Length: 376
Image (tube, rainbow, N blue to C red; front, side, top):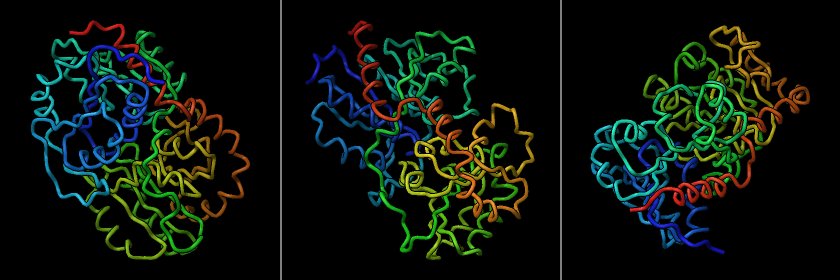
């Protein structure tokens, strides 16, 4: 049963990398399914437009609009991450179009420059795109959001501890868990060897890539007993172009699947089908642990991680301090999993909150903001 529509309209900003889409789009579907409020989806490229046009066909209240500076790019329809228009000029040019919106919803901090720098009647609602102990919570742009949607009470508390107003942070559950447009429902391999997902982070101080990455990949590939999904953060190739060279070298092997810009690497496909997670500090491990499974963490930088809350996720599996022990740790992972399963379940639950219904709760919060915000 649909509710009476609040006056005004909601604008959703799909301006950044495709990795943001699964964190934001489930809210669109939930809002469209439960309210007649007009919904405008602002898109920056033809890749975003193609995906959203396909998914929103059943919803008459949804309109897709191109931002000023919209970029048409080569697109095979699969959602490969495109080259984006320059974000700040795009936002400035978009500003006049957003003045008619009552609420603006975004999943990244760049868009929060608008309410931070310009007087706006529209209330900005920021939804999280990933969780984890290393999230950048102190960015001053966060204070420009009228409301921030976070997955869990634990995540909400980290902001309250920093002096943020309690009424501006709401725990909804993990919105991405409600995303239903995954690319792969089964591993992309012809055989049933165990599947290892290696996801090095893109920031050098947090990543295993620069010290160990290529050797980690080569050791697993040479061993031959595992199917390897090598799917680092989309932005890693910007900082380390040699990633693409390695992918070209090994990508044709039957037990290797490489992805640097495909939609599958951000839509939950790989974290859903892998048997073992191998990584460093990426928040993808928390998504992986929605269903507890073996994890191995790479301490390539020799961090003194025990007791450091920034590395809280490393309590969920064996931590490797020597690259030569990577394959051995993978061999042990299934045998040791019983030691970590309870820790994993608790960590994921505390980090993600509810893993069902997050999008619906987020949509309800947006309606609440509309009902308490004067329309024009």
